[in-house]
Length: 167
Ligand SMILES: Cc1cc2nc3c(=O)[nH]c(=O)nc-3n(C[C@H](O)[C@H](O)[C@H](O)COP(=O)(O)O)c2cc1C
Image (cartoon, rainbow, N blue to C red):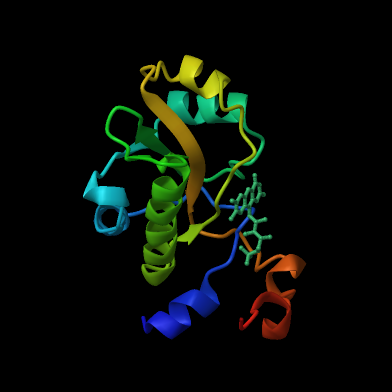
């Protein structure tokens, strides 16, 4: 897909069918996360792929935003590897770039997706038994939309003049 089309087609999807994402497409999505830039190229990202019934039930325990997706990525940062900048570490920045790469590649592959921040950031570590040095930053349900389109919020964009300031 043309890049211009990808960024225009991407939208948050909040109802998925149970059709699983093909392995080939999932691999491309994960590869896009591997190609993302990170501070000092430290590549601190760790992506947990949740597809088992048990794992998906655990996601439902810590978030109401799975929207029945059959695959959920837990996008994490290894705090032992992340760049320690002057103003704090770049964990959230690195994870966000990685997540954005994967979100756009998902759209490119025709795989619907959504970024989820609304989850219990503490309990997730407990239910998935994540090591202390792993910081979960975002969830990303992946799958195929179930008779639904973009939400009304999707097309509500501010004018460029409102968000761009030439100084
Ligand atoms: C950082 C971030 C956190 C988000 N968290 C949630 C969430 O917890 N639950 C949800 O339903 N949508 C969540 N979203 C989706 C946004 O609501 C959605 O991207 C936004 O309304 C714009 O719509 P669009 O993605 O269709 O363009 C999140 C998006 C971002 C970028």
